[in-house]
Length: 545
Image (cartoon, rainbow, N blue to C red; front, side, top):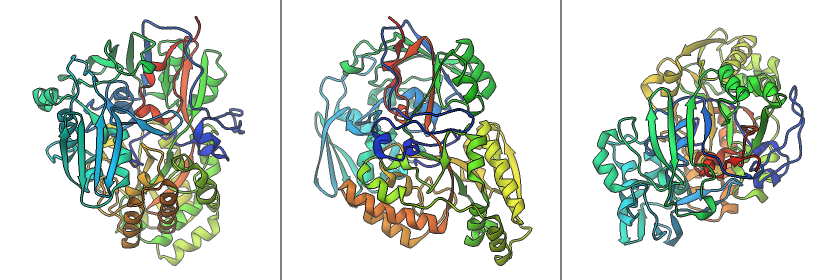
């Protein structure tokens, strides 16, 4: 998950396909109520030529461009093209070398990364091991306040062991840490830039000086962020097809759809579900669907209140009409979620997906039985407070559905509307959760390993928003995280999935594929959630020669 991140609920994934082929690129078309069939593919058709620039729509302005604080779609969508990691997640959800040409694990407590030689930062200086050590250690420094600090919980030291070699030493085996070197925890920034920028780093007043195919040109706060092509980019296979990118921020879903239709925005990820059918039939471009690792869940925030009783959590789950939620919240493009971590999160060992995920039963829908569970728990008439927001229409749709379901079974589900920025704060500020029982989340993995999602339900983890604690679960997690073989680790992760479904610290709601709108002028974009770290803008170019 990198868990329920903020916000929009165009949830989830290549989980849509009934075969593992979706995780490696494509699936057969599936029926989608109200919008016709669709298929999941990893990329759009390749670009046929270059562009001077293109304009890309984000559903919100990034709150930071500091990689250590980036914990949501808007900042990561920009940074994916500016900063890079030691490893890289590819559009077909594989992990490959990035700024590290290789890594080794001489023993279970040691990770050694050999860095790529000759890589230039945007200011022309050359990347060294000192830059990597400084970049990774920022997550471990409490002064940084990095939401990724818990990823380094088992790290005892990050050391330069050669001019182009960095060694991470661990207190216990930690497979996930290495995989997360393909996400924000593995980002490399110039140590000199970090020292010089200080607290202004990653803000509109500061700068970003990384190694990606594009460099930060300007951040006009409240208006736009522009990037320019980097002349010294090391990966010739990802030389940008465009000289520049302009990001605009449009929070209103209808206004965002109008920007796509009018051509003032050439494209954008996470297409508003309320406009999906209109955009697909407009003739002004294409809506494409890609691999996803996300699921829309209800995260329990207070285990001392009404939802502290497992019977009540089970009852609320049983009362959800997930199929109708998919129609209303995802434009019919999706499926009821079987587990907190989506099917697309099981991409690292796809041969295990059928037996460990697909075999799960559909979540039951039984209002009568749910009402009886509430009665048995003595919870009839008790209050459940659910956060809602105008941040995305999907949030309101799901919130209203949960409220209606609760009322049917005797729960008083009250909706607390919060501003978009306040909704985001729920996921980073424990104080913002006061008085709330539930929040609608979009829980997704940054890597194709389902264990990443389930680490966020571990006792004390940053992403464990309700402070749920289960010793059986913690022991099972530690066992899985010490297993280097992906197939065997998947088997162990299935035990975490079983416990999570039994105890419901997060109630699964629905899955949908990742989505992207491409206007007639552009093509070449990866279509899936890998765009959060893969330099997707480099592959976008002209649709016609």
